[in-house]
Length: 390
Image (cartoon, rainbow, N blue to C red; front, side):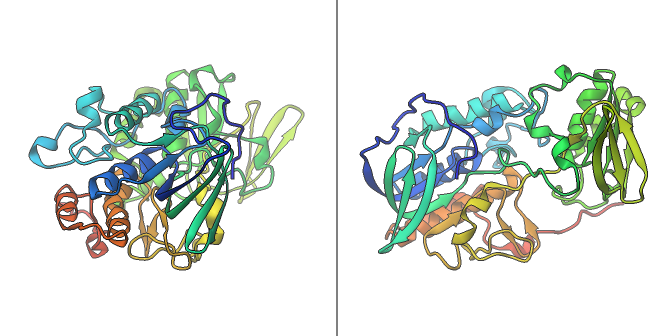
């Protein structure tokens, strides 16, 4: 299931090549979803679990472009019973510990490592998951460091390391924003960005502040979307940055402009829209097309929804493979999209309670505590309400 080679560095609690350990739960992925789910399991009374990651804790966040920051603000509001939007555990506030409102990826990766250390989470880093099978009611997980077995699996491998690279002819000629290390170091003065949601506007903002000229194309009109759902509309933080003088003077937005193809003609990139308009640039176009997500690696363990995402039970469990759970930005229920931390963290408690109950652990106090912090969302009828405007 790996797509990149891992470092040879030995991670803490790494599995040995001869190991064949058995656990109640294996959590795959040590990002925000994996670390958050692990803390919830511990709070629910589950002790026999292991976090496995093909790299290190928070590595996807550490891979963000240097300038990219969280669009959701952190605020130390725990004292009044309102959990910090960027927190993945009850009572924890990244704002309080980091003193940053909009952390960058490296800062948040460090925060996740601090949480893993504080809660003493058992982690096997630099451990690639190669195959998952269920035999005799136990999952057999083949890894680069040996075989492990588990009664339950939580797939929390995230999506940033799995960008969507297709979608139109010539997409391979573009550079995905996920591969950018630092926008200020990109050569060229005239950029075309394909995709106008958060990552596309983020790229345009940083390039504009460097004095670059940018054209942004999107098949929809994210900057004109009136929905209150942050999965559909741009974040307030993004709209605010679009008011920056450098953005207004250097960025041109093209809505309802689907891209049909990209070709390279005599050292010029030709970007052709569905209306057969052609735009040219000497700079390789930036692709801000989102992410395929890691759930594609375990698609055989889930039924599939019409939109291609895994079909889940009310406890975020596979409907065809009992004991196989999903946590993170790929979680979908009906028309509800749990793509941001403050959304998908609300399901950690649901998964932890389901697993703890299956192990015979009493969960009433756990559920009450998590529900009180807004970390146990089991009634989805309250989701999707639009904001009132005056």
